[in-house]
Length: 442
Ligand code: SF4
Ligand code: SF4
Image (cartoon, rainbow, N blue to C red; front, side, top):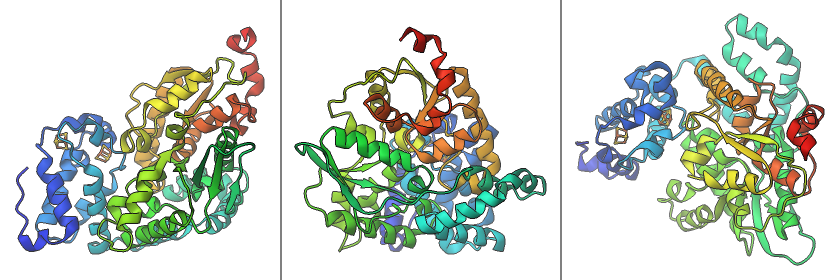
């Protein structure tokens, strides 16, 4: 694609990067076929190619974002399916991140929208505040349908996503020593939403790692990775959170890896080197942190895991989180680990399509998110699984609101199959699972 940025514009490193990305696009449109929003509605402006044109026009002409551009960029899930499909290597993620930051700087949203976004940005990344909000949501949760009926769709979406039980305490900074000789040392990103909503995920990861002789450090000072606000265009807040984590992790000696159990966070931490490339104090350390970041399944795939007897041929529908399959290109390891441990893994048809979770998307774009969820649940149920596994708390929560099937993190199954406890979501279904023919045969 031809571009016409001036030299003065190109002096801005973000504009220079976006110009490079825009030039790589050859308008072929292959990406449209795998874009969830285009697949739903067939509107070119809600396709990657359409959005690329809108972003080009806005940046090239140095224009403030319009309501129309904002609408179509807001509808983008940042699922990155378009990056997997694109034959020209267009780095859509960095382009849309730049566009979101430009929108945040130059577009004044309606007051109610600003208020909601400010509330999400000041609650979600902070576990203690999130706990308070979730406690309040427990009271409001029975009224989700009423909120929907009177048109408060986003409030209804938030209430539906909130769990029926009280929130958990976030993991305190500490070191989990492995019994026996130490074979490795990793930092674990405890995360924000993940840790408050589903502490069993990190607990399972810690048990599996410790069992394999790996010491796990939850670093003092580390917190939200920044992705929630990054995807809302709140660049400054995201960079503060990234720097805080970099300080926390680089203060620890002898780390082999930074292990992440939420793939949305993993994609962002792996991008820290790019996000802070122009920061003279953090550029080098951010690149180091990014190079150490791994998804839990990437790390476990290199270790000698041995199966216990718990899997019993349980049929797992593996839902590939977009951030894991498209953002990090981790596709093989989660499924191979589950198969190795005795589970029967079934791919979900149209597995490249997002479930609609996407950070705060299922709140901010609740209608599209629900349509994507319903579509995802239909395809999952078609493979008749006993359980759904995914590598991202967002997907697990989103999918669980649309099905009676248990949804768990992949590492919970790995832990269970290697001697850990049964995942809580599966525990409720154990009597039915025990009646299955494969279980009886086992
Ligand atoms: S597939 Fe790639 S090159 Fe083709 S239109 Fe989409 S982004 Fe551009
Ligand atoms: S990131 Fe996902 S929703 Fe956004 S343009 Fe690409 S494929 Fe479409």
